[in-house]
Length: 443
Ligand code: FCB
Image (cartoon, rainbow, N blue to C red; front, side, top):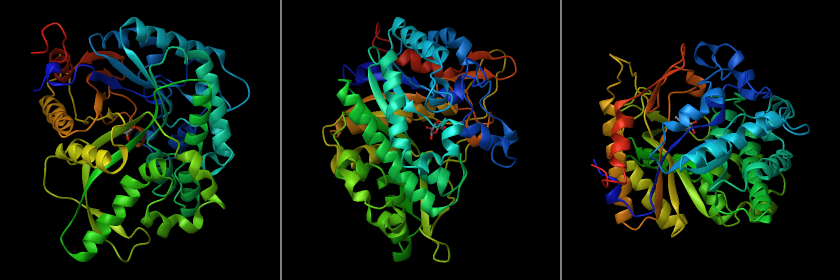
């Protein structure tokens, strides 16, 4: 396993979480979110579970952050619905007080606070107004951004506007797997564009305040064609536009990829071109979330994008996701070559779910240790190949509410017993803590 000394001097090691997945939205005056609505409908979420209690981090944040002693940074998010229970209008002071205490607690432990402003808990009131399909959301998000920054902007090390716009738009409005659970191409095109516009407006507000280290967090997958047949090669290229280029291309060049124009172009809002300048204003860094690889084949009888996945024989996680560390190197080098150049990259999420069990007080997650080790090697290789990667955040600090999978899938370095809220650090946590030690330069 590589150790801290193998990485550049200022490389940051951290862990990531998000508000709705850990805090417990029943506490502290948070408003209802579109995830609560979605989870209440049978069939959407395993066991209809929601984030009402989650890891009770709202009350346990101090002890949770103690677990990060020795790390360099902590990536977390503020919940829009906790700060503004109705999405706009009255502010929940208790919510802002919580984030104020949280940021101080992060700093007290010598960690850099990496804030994400939106990690999916859209206030239900805004969802009722059309949510991401309503263009006005860009202004609402800008106002929320200002309110959060007024309180904690002086102490955060870095700000990401939105986590995984692909999930916010495509996964949630086209595939229907996440809230609001739509399968509507018009809603999808509008959500795609409005997420970008909201990012652009928030960036403008953040810049106007003099806030620095601004970026966004995108998710990428390694893709490969299921065969060398021309139709499968074409399908893989189409899906690459849909999955990997849908956001990075407009953000960096102000244009949508060809396959997106072919599929969604006629559904984009009128005069969408006028927004592209704001959308593609320079950022200071890019967050890369990487987990897995997909194998794509043509599905000509299905509607756009007429592609489908096939399962191949390889090691998989509890999610059934291919374990393919080389894909992280492929992603980082591709982004650097084609889009980001010298701009800093952070691996803002990487990790795996496993059916971890506490046995005699320990969790032996050797599969996760191997996963982390192999992905760190690929980051190291990418740095050697000239990529400006400046940090790695394991997803996630602790087991939590895994969206449509409820509490069933465990991604944490820390095991959480959701009955008792007992935390048990897994072996992977102990190992990562060892290798990033500064005093002995790791083991
Ligand atoms: C990402 C999300 C994160 C978590 C991981 C497993 O897509 O950003 O909240 O669900 O996947």
